[in-house]
Image 1 (tube, rainbow over the protein chains, first blue to last red):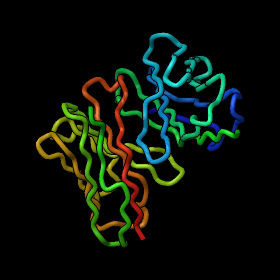
Image 2: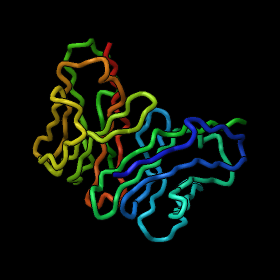
Image 3: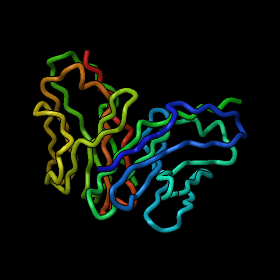
Length: 114
Length: 114
């Protein structure tokens, strides 16, 4: 079985500050991990994915995430927040070699203050 | 390339009525998925089509939900009769083949049952 925990339903940062959105996963086999973003009134858009290659994954819009097996984490970061980053972010896990249907977290709303 | 299209974008119906949601996947995508998000909770898997066949419908809540995919193109999700707990955002996603590439999601249908 697989599961995802996103710590914090809301994260608030100032424009220009570091963005850190936390995601911990549980998986009985090596996982595939994803971050999606949903802007208001839009569908979910894939930010980045980890599929057992490099552990530091770079995505769109300056976001990156690092897969840490020992910590079962896949936190999303961005060095400097922009107002346009305000959105809801979802972490998802699927199991390689097994059921590929991803399990999503509850989402984290990122609020960016001027 | 047109994205995944869902309509209606919003629907408000009374308890006991019937509602049909439609999803048009990206042309050529054999895989089509339905997900649902109840307010503030996880995005949960409902079912997966490969072309016109149901590959996995383990997430369908009960027999009030009926999904079809005509000729392997667009898909409909019918809720009959609707109950209050069916309220939420229904997402459709499609993928060409390897799920590892990540899905392309539609913008969702917000269903409110009153």
